[in-house]
Image 1 (cartoon, rainbow, N blue to C red):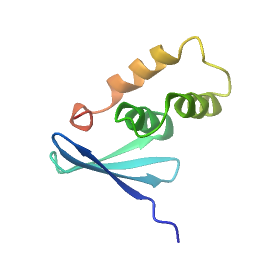
Image 2: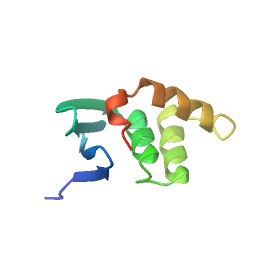
Image 3: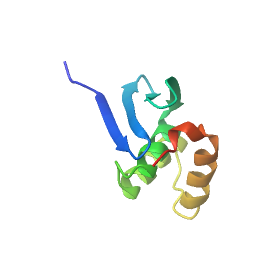
Length: 91
């Protein structure tokens, strides 16, 4: 069985995440809370923490939406970053 539990070290503490169905389950050690994010939002969060590259993020968003978004990728990223609980955006 593949281990799908990962951790990010940030200046505010550790952030744990794992693939959970069609999205991600994040645990903020500092906030002591779980957050369940869809695939796109989760990828935006991982991209924010520099764990995936922008090209991979764009492909995942395009696959989820079903159309190319090269002209509006930054707008979509900003939109999803605004939806993510601020306790997850520690860096």
